[in-house]
Every structure is written in C-alpha cells, then in structure tokens.
Length: 147
Picture 1 (cartoon, helix red, strand yellow):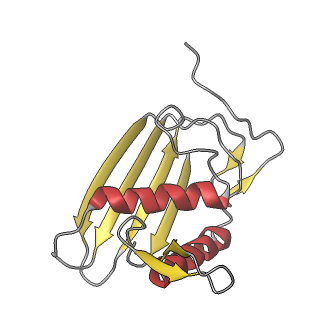
Picture 2: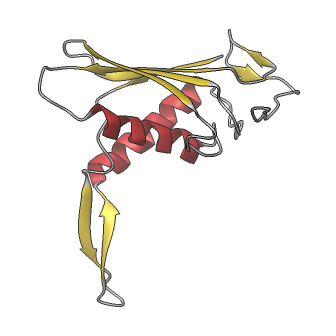
C-alpha cells in the first residue's frame, strides 16, 4: 500500500480552463488556469517531499481517496478526483488512470474546517516498498489483473 497526504484546496482541472492567443500564429487555444498549474506544481513538490516513488504502476486494485473540504459550499467531488488522478499520472506514480488500471475507487468527502486537502491510498499493488520511509526497493513490480 502507498499512502499520500496532500495539503491545500484541490482545484478542478476541468472547470479551470482559459482561452489564450498564440502570439506567433494568432490562433486561439485552451489551457489550464494558472491556479490549477500552481496547485499541480505544489502538489508535485509535496509528493517529492514525501518520497513517493515514480513507479509508473500499471495496475492498482483499489484506490481510496478522502477529500477534505474547508467549507460547506457545494463542490463537484469527481472533478477533484480527476485532478488528483492526473497529478499521479503526470508525476509518474501510475501509468494511466483509466478504469482497467484503477478499477475500484472508494471516494469520500469530509468537512475539515480551514484544512483542505486529501489522503490517497493505493492498495493491491505488487510491491517491494518500505512504508516507513516511502522509498522503493529494488524489486518494485508492475502488475495487471489476471483473468
């Protein structure tokens, strides 16, 4: 099992797009907002500081995510999960976040006043991994479910 804790509000990547104009070509393009880019960079740094290895896992049997909300405003929890999954792929912890690679998701939203963030647990990976130091040993393996 790999356990991760991220601090800070998780922005929705899907709802934070901006329209820009390419200065060279004059064509318009859509890009992720600066808020999301800043969160992504900060979250990547948090993963690095926790010594989360870049395993490029092909299969995670169960993914458990608890998202902590700092207020009681309505917020789309599934968009936040997309941001988290994209972060894990971009970081190199998991290879792909499609349903075949991550078939079971347990998701919870919890109110935690003035302390937003999330906890992520990846279960059912075949690993040689020191949970105390979050460091990978020589024999980290990628697996796929066997039919």
